[in-house]
Length: 169
Image (cartoon, rainbow, N blue to C red; front, side, top):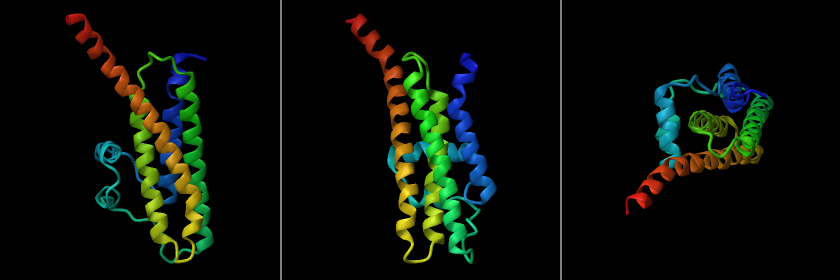
């Protein structure tokens, strides 16, 4: 497998997730503002403002519950596929590989997934909250692997500083 092929596996999975979410109405196209919001969300947690900044709203109102549940299942499948691709890539990527691009992509996917989860929660009628739990668990798994990428990127950026500090003394 060439470096170009394996470098983009996470980004391709994220792109499929975002495209599927946008085509079904519970996701939007990425923008710089959304990327900044994703980074802010990872640093400071999810705020109501982060999710509600979007002009578009999931067309869940008046939609049959069966179709909302189908959308939730589609979203869960894409979140799981993205998580698995990220986990595999994380395990096989050389320790010295810069994962910054993949981290940026995963942050965007996490933001889209959190947003979709919130929109579904608003669209589901009372009594169906439990049917959202599998998606929430999948989003939590995506958050964990995104955190792992973030930890590795931070360690890689901190390592040169630590090495310089010890060699100066």
